[in-house]
Amino acid sequence: MYGERDIYDNEWVKLQLWDVEPPGVKRFEHHVVRLQHVAITAVLDNQDRVLMLWRYRFVPQQWGWELPGGIVDAGEDPAETARREVEEETGWRPKSVEHVVTYQPVVGMVDSPHEIYVGHGAERVGDPTDLEEAGHVEWVPLADIPGLMARGQLMGSGTLVALLHILANREKARATASS
View 1 (cartoon, rainbow, N blue to C red):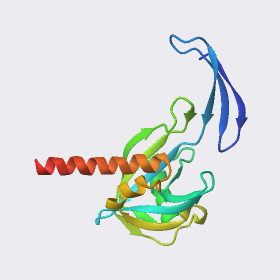
View 2 (cartoon, rainbow, N blue to C red; view 1 turned 60 degrees about the vertical axis):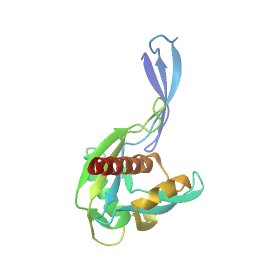
View 3 (tube, rainbow, N blue to C red; view 1 turned 135 degrees about the vertical axis):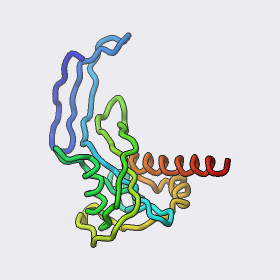
View 4 (tube, one colour; view 1 turned 90 degrees about the vertical axis):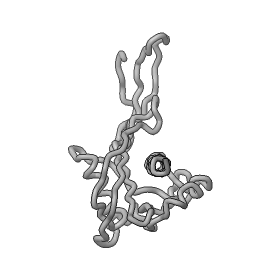
């Protein structure tokens, strides 16, 4: 990389122009979007349900199911963000959270690290405190997830990555148990 310059910058999004020359490619300018670092959590209970939010998102102009999550504050441990966001958005406090993967949702153009956590068990501590984010809170059976996915009712890559991780590991555990 030969340099970068900001085109637009605020607390939510930064647009940059990078002067790059990848191996074997002629030098060019590349647009890069920098978004926030986020943590997203799938909390499971002992009845094979996952804690979710039914919300309206105005960008795609649709309702859908999402997992709780949000921005990792400066200096905050992403695991703490995962716990905090679940509590703020749902009124439930996870008993534990485990990091399962960090990924970039639009690799090559957007920089926005996504930390995915799975929590086990939760304690009801009150009503959601982040009413803008809360939506309708519900424990959704894991058996319903494939149908919700097929109908396009799961929103956001973090929700999909976390739930697909859970479903894949359940299938792997079942296959191991039956052999």
